[in-house]
Image (tube, rainbow, N blue to C red; front, side, top):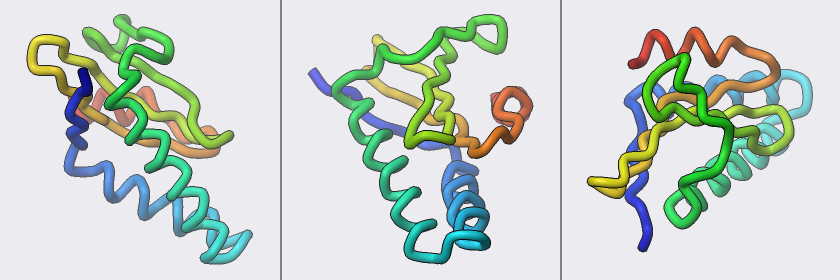
Length: 104
């Protein structure tokens, strides 16, 4: 059975910031392509939600998984409601742990 993907309201801003960051040195097409890879990765979590490292020290059921080379996707999985909640997406060494703390 598939899980429903839910995104924290600031995830779209994360994706915008990643696009802007990559575009600043590699061009808009490359920035958009990289974000498309990340979005595609996230969509696959609906079928395979139990991947990534469990980081309970940062929050219950929190998982962090690398995506598209330099990105980290942080999310929780709720088996009762069959949902995956995307909390944040960081890129190129940004502080995803702090982002998670602020959004929980």
